[in-house]
Image (cartoon, rainbow, N blue to C red; front, side, top):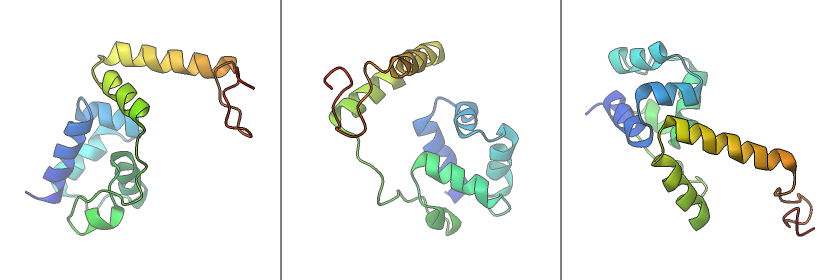
Length: 124
């Protein structure tokens, strides 16, 4: 299996579709499709970096034909993992509603953490 096939497999393991990935990455679908058809070699560096960042893999690895996770990838807390698991079970409309609701909660300021103290706003 070549690196492009491995990349496609990784994308589909983490996203509902290639199109969903391209939307999340703000990369044209045709660009990613061309990577699968013609190889990653001629792809713009900024595009490769964006793809690698979003998938949590190294740029160096992909340029050598290897899909390898970034060593310094942040570990999710149990609460974050649970939230992400629930989020992944939702359809596109449900995911949009969750993101809208989270943004609304942040905008109110009531539930935001205070940057200086680390306390929740309602505790401060």
